[in-house]
Image (cartoon, rainbow, N blue to C red; front, side, top):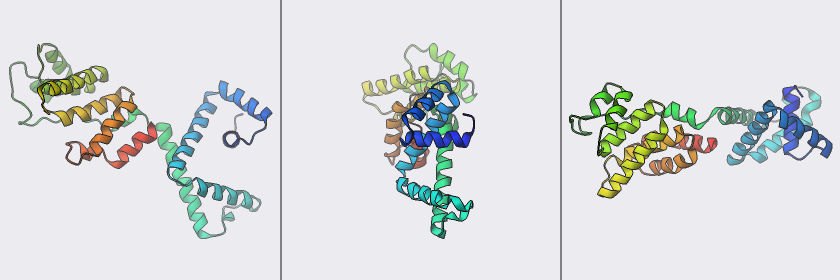
Length: 246
């Protein structure tokens, strides 16, 4: 099998249970040995899942029926009414858009498109001899991490800056560890220092570490908290992409 349209039709019929047992066996053998067919099958499944979420599965079926009835004409005008033509175009556009997102959207891509290191202000903590603030402001994450390792008892601010430095260096695992330590320290002190920051960057760290199932509850909490510092970064479209991806 090397014709894309034929492959797609076979895969659709396969998912619809329309193939004979012999055809099903041959196709499953081909899928098992052909990564391109495996990817195409997953793409079709993803599109169908998204279409179901938008509640337009019945509309697709109706349009497909109209297409089948109009095949003898050999022209796109088989949809006799203008509303049906518009519906067909909209559904096709949605399917193509959904296919694009589901085939390309990954935790790493979503993280890369949205990660921005925290911006320091004068009110975010005092300077001291072992402060991480100076190298952080110089955009020197390696120096931040080096200074952090010299701290015997890092404060919440230090943990937050070190986590951002590790993320900038592409190392989400130590960033996660630092942010969880920040939250644990706040709990011990009965404090909320940098709590909003910790929640947002912990969620981003989970995305960078390819663990979206742990990121989603944090992002949903942020989205549902009107006064959260990062509420504007987690809008409904961002959440929709998260759920599509997951």
